[in-house]
Length: 357
Image (cartoon, rainbow, N blue to C red):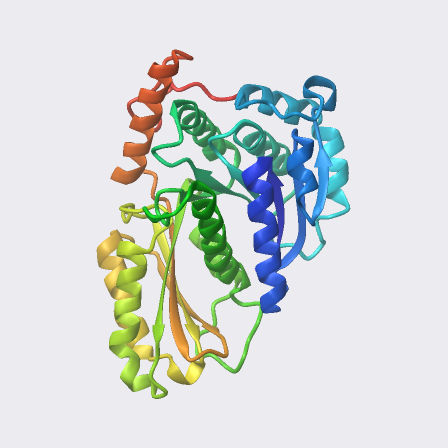
């Protein structure tokens, strides 16, 4: 899938660079452009991709200090200048644009939905947001910011693929080590998903392409991505149970948004050498995902790769009604009450949780 990445804010810029590096190292060529926008000059200076500083007149290059309303205002005020910079970077063959942002901070949390709105006004390709949710220990301001940002992102973007910071962090890591590990896992999982259909090492029986990803996300809302891998036998007939086991691990323990399995649509991608991919295993795994998610729209396909391992990617679309999302929005409501910033919500679609704009 040919995409252009736009990182907004500190986390967005870092993840965008890691994704671009992974795509380049793997030779996928799925990422057709990478760009970072921020209000903090220091955060941009550490990046090796093209960058743009916004809000200079208002914050003097020092960032918005976690104020996502200000982040949204700056992005709206400078939308023309940002779009001018993006026009030259969004390739004509791009099949989607993906905004990457941490939803708990200031610039990314406010700027991502504002930019998504502007991009959707101008371009006719899907505009996705890869949004990173703050962990439980990251403070009330981050929770409140993410709740408001998420509600606005859902309205303005074609789909929001969420990464929960708590999903892949281990207890023995420092904060810095934790974020670096999460970024690497995002790069591997999202990078493989975006590359599906772009590189073919051999001939797969049912190769997934970008239309399968787009159709899985077509209904909008919140999406989640799971991953698992294991050693594979040379003979495909010996990998039936391996593939079904990988699908289970991917959905039940490897999702970017844990415990969110009720979905409108799903896509199962099995990556590996075509001779090692069991069609019986893929079909069994696909039927199991249908039962587990309650979705009648479960697509499947292969991603031929030269590897002794097999990997399963599970993309879920429309998981916003799941208990996991409701739990997060409850957390955002409580955080809003703690910060006394505004009335919050007990349910995802409650109008008491203010939009950013």
